[in-house]
Image (tube, rainbow, N blue to C red; front, top):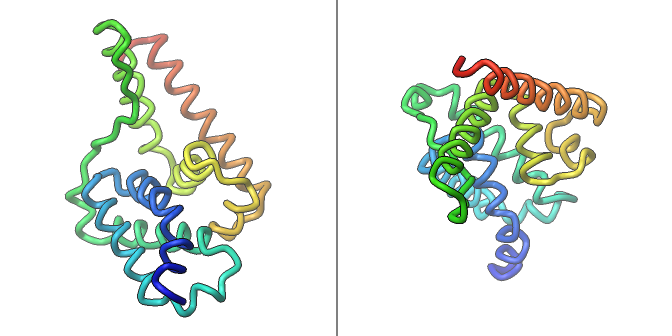
Length: 169
């Protein structure tokens, strides 16, 4: 495999690798390190990449496993929440504060989800993978993925509704 072939195969989904790593590790710096490690592992094993039917799914599985291992390590004690993807400059200051508060609440709720639900939510709702792709990545059946996704969404909806209905938890 030439360098150009490697770049054409791997680079289109490097941002997805980063976003999954960021969702799991939360810290931008940790996610950048993880992405670099995954890309380096792919580069070092590029002769084996052609053996995989879906290199993207394989890479996402590698990312998930790498990040979960990283979280289990002692280095995980230093990770902090630094996550907000929403920004709109055309709204009033009060509305922007409210929206940022809602995004913060959703982030906190997602971070509190069980690891499996968090990963499935990231892959389906943010990365837009199909259920069969997620099933391949996580080695699960599609029904279990749908159930976990439904539970994750329900938890987020209920907790966010309770937060807005009753004030700060």
